[in-house]
Image 1: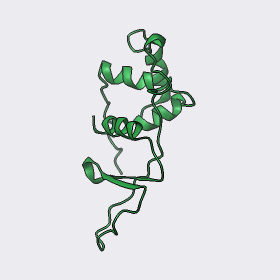
Image 2: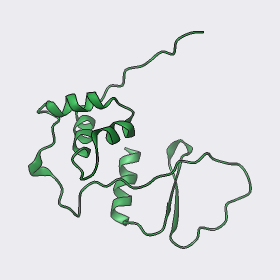
Image 3: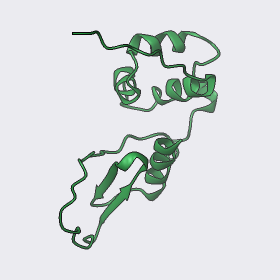
Image 4: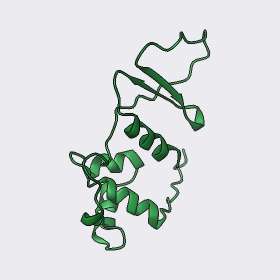
Length: 121
């Protein structure tokens, strides 16, 4: 039985800054951001100590612009009968790689647009 080869992910300076900035959102922990990007939280803490990547408090977004995590469910694609028409307050978005994002109930359109831009970058 062979060992799986691990490849080292190389993050650009802009990606590091973006990841570090996300840790400043109210109620968001470094561990949550680390899981989102499949990176060790200790690496993010290391980046946060580096002045090149540490978020600038002066550039923090206003409360209406701050980053927010939205609940997302990733479901396996099925090849069964076509889906029924979307119900009211229901959005389904198919992303690259065959993943789908479903939003039920009320939502903030601007926050949703920022989330989609973040996932497709």
